[in-house]
Length: 103
Picture 1 (tube, helix red, strand yellow):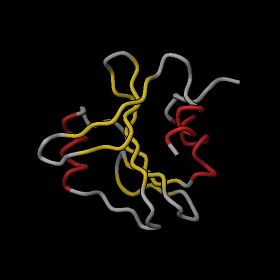
Picture 2 (cartoon, helix red, strand yellow; picture 1 turned 45 degrees about the vertical axis):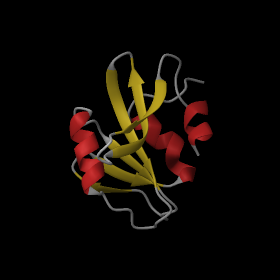
Picture 3 (tube, helix red, strand yellow; picture 1 turned 120 degrees about the vertical axis):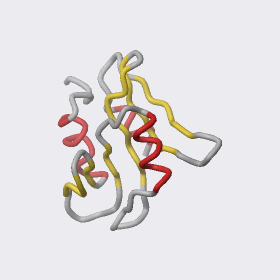
Picture 4 (cartoon, rainbow, N blue to C red; picture 1 turned 135 degrees about the vertical axis):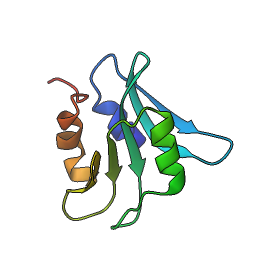
């Protein structure tokens, strides 16, 4: 999954992860320079949930948009600044945040 995200990023964007010793974490952080553009969580559940650790990590990162990638059938907005998509629509959703590779 991470390889697919990386393959679809525009030049100049970097991937990393975020984890604290207290357990706050984000699976994939997309940044450009020091600016965090997008946080991505990869979930196996059809109904992903945002954990307390995810919320803390998002706050630490400056509250970037969060994209859950899961096996869900349809894309939807979970709450303000948080979306859920599936692997088939990942490219379209990366485009929404301006980080997709230009063809």
